[in-house]
Length: 575
Image (cartoon, rainbow, N blue to C red):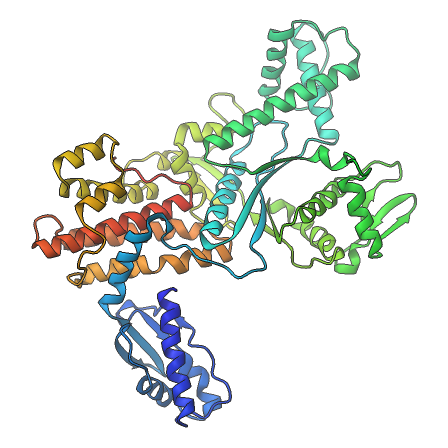
């Protein structure tokens, strides 16, 4: 149980006791609902329960606050209580409570901050990136890759069961256009005097794919039927782009449970049905499908959409929306409690029709869409439009290659997904405190250095060589059961308070789909550690003080590494 929850129980017990002995005349008391004081000097937590009870209890908030304080049960959590302003109850925790966080972190290690959520939305399908396999991914896809992966990590840490999925848009006219574009470049490269097809894909990568076909097959495809050539090149090019996406995302640290092909939605199983036919039938049985002018429509206006949506055109061709209908129905058939899609902000107008189809199937609220804003790329403050290498857009893989995975991930997650990101390539490469990811990683590396200095030389050498993990080294340096009572310096208390925030932060970041908070937390924790290290010597103090501070240093290492791990950023032992 989190410190906050334990403290709320103490306040709730005080209110209940006051009601029971008649000090407060209430039919029903609100929960304590603790919050952090804006000014840390006012204490660790504050309760506004007295202000919210004033009307019902017919007393001034300050009088109510005093009654609650007088009824506080005996506990080992509260060091002091102060009634402030109109009736705030400001609470300062005992050092023992904060010291318990140090022990907890060292006991559970990578499980620090883990939680459990109630039943109901535990099995989650998280679909993200889902770039068309018709070209390299751009830097915007990189933001969705970082956001989706870190969201999954944070939600799992909070207790959700998350299934990560990439939807491959491998059906439709854009795939044929892709095949035709490669075919055109192939013929041009072999001497054909033909123009590029209208609205064709014109990137240099199309020429590279075509040249690869020439290198492998020569002029084998020159004299074949145009349709056959297009279909062959479509599949060759599609698989090449898909492999590139898989490799790029794997190198970035993404691990999808499923790469779902759009084509599979139209394939009939042994029962003669497909996700397309089953999804329409499920809507039709509820009365939300009708035929008009030869086309098949979904009655989405019944759920507040601005107009009904066509699923099957008059000529029998399926619409793009039909694919979405079938895809989301297939997710429900697979047993997910909740669906989360990460889309670009330009898809905002598409949300209502998709949430409507979930309502039509009797699953209102089962679909959640997280919209993400764009990434603006800069180099030393100057906007970057084109790649130096190709003269075209800067691809996601090029950005990773130049900046590195850790800096790219961290900076892509530095702001809420509903805000645009200004990503400066040169700033991301800096190796100093101006670069937030370097600042945080340096704090972790410094901690590891302290532990090595405190260790037996042989153990320190083994850790340097990677033969001993930092967890193993720390256990040799100071046992988990060490006396932590010497940890009373204000810098120590500040550091422990920041660590005590972690569990709740994870729960809220998971609930709000806001992994960016972990970047802010990591910087705050690193700053608190640096301040502690400046004010409190570790090595060379009295044995009991040194041991307690080494334990605090180790707990900080665990918290920092866990926070970085939840956003997919490494925690180096040396820098």
